[in-house]
Image (cartoon, rainbow over all chains, first blue to last red; front, side, top):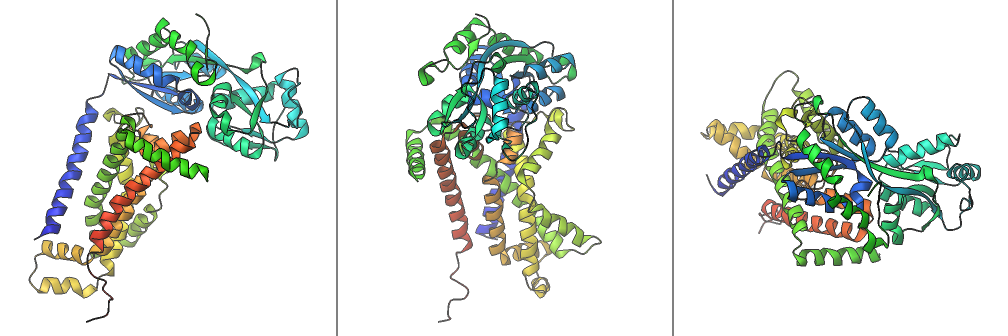
Length: 277
Length: 237
């Protein structure tokens, strides 16, 4: 035999060793792990990159933050694949709790959505008296509109707003990206289209976009975030203690102090506001 | 075009700064993809040989499955592995969802058909009488198998390169079963998607550049091993 056999044996043992080491390392995490299902926009804001390490250091839990669309986060909760949810789709959350998947939802912070669009404002929504009227004008002018189209919190709210205004969007001007807020804004910017965005993502991408905030302030555009521990009766692998600890931490004064100033240096204003002090 | 230059500058800056986050991402990418490729080689080369040298009912059907497996969309593989591994799934009790081990499993599923299929073709390419000749010269069955692998080494190394390239560059499966968790399951490809989604195009390009440099280094090493001989077609002296 020769160098090849030796090399082969070496590589073989590395691969087996590698897989075994992974398995051993993985066994070590079980009920110190908390699976947090949240949304991509919450993750992208960077707030969790501050709060989660604080929580981990304080309690010793290891948090696995899984950022997906709201629809997927709620689905994970229903299946018991997550221990706690941090989402922003109040109507869906209430359904979630009513169906018994979570004990209660705790709304704790909010920001708002804005209608953004090209500087020229072809649909003239800047002077609209309400968001319903603004949307009606977009439909009337058949101005290009980019929807998330992905069952995210933003998309769910968008659909609600169309319904409440008595409108059914469809046709060549209504396009769905199926992607996250950042990517959708980039597409809308390229196409000079209107879009519904949370203020935070828009602010963080502003310098790369050719879009402005054209309509804001309607109370229907409030974006409320809640934390929901998943019902532990679903499965014995749900880390109920960890979920409760995370929930308690997020609702604590320590977290509140972080939340109410987060984003101020970067954007000139905090990205989130507290529901109560 | 600015963006490309910014991306390369950012790549160099990140590497020189010794950013700890970047280091964990790079090491994890290597660990996961190299382990998956090695496991696929360990399983795939014997399977490919076995399929090449055997006769049984339904052999061609199995081979067609291996071949179609080469084109399996990684994101679909990720979804299927996730369904098996998440808590509500049949293997949920293992508790390995959102760990590097889950990513290794998913990437092995992706690379295995590639390596099996290419090894199969490599062995079938050999002259059919070679096997008999080796045995006739007194080789044991095991030696015969080993010599045939050596005969087909160019193609088998190509299979390894293809398998490695396939998994180091995939993002769908890693995202689904890994969850892109910082310092736990974030690899270069999933980090690039994250930065792109946030609009940090220079960071995204930087990560892409680093990934390419990494992949190139490893592929270069494999290529040099593959191409060790002088060209078979150089004129005789």
